[in-house]
Amino acid sequence: MTRHTKLLEQHSKNIDLKKKEQALFSARKEVEIYGNGTTGYKVKHGPHKGKVLGHLTTKSTNNW
Image (cartoon, rainbow, N blue to C red; front, side):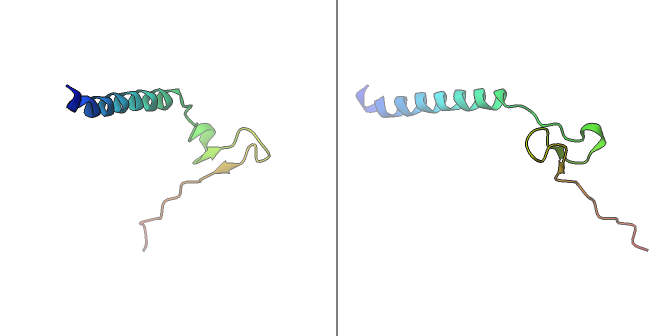
């Protein structure tokens, strides 16, 4: 059994790491994109409050 100790320890560490990553992933807050008709993320706090960042634009394919 001693020859498998390293593999078992690595496996248990990987499982613990995955659990921690999942906990962090599920605890994060979603940002409100497209809120209030904007096409980007609206800053809610700080000196740039109310400013919209990252406007999405699409190029027109109607080139006559």
